[in-house]
Image 1: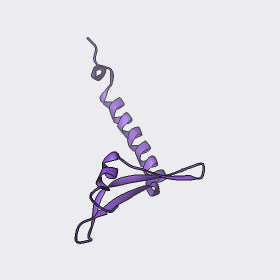
Image 2: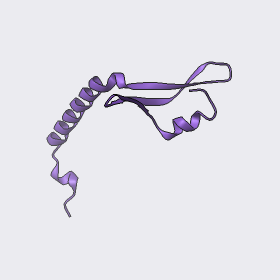
Image 3: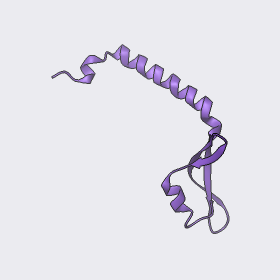
Image 4: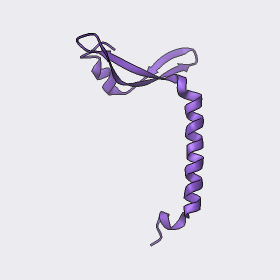
Length: 79
């Protein structure tokens, strides 16, 4: 039985990693300012990092996209 590893040479794998890293670098450069941290506060008022979110502008409508656990966290802390 032929497996995927049998079809990809070490050189091909190195090139795929190189291309993937380049694409990740480009995405980071383009979207860096849209990813923002989400903080809550402890009882003493000190901030604690909870997660992150992505700021979106959809045809003039502003939105904040984050995970459900961040919204759940708002039950026990101020975001």
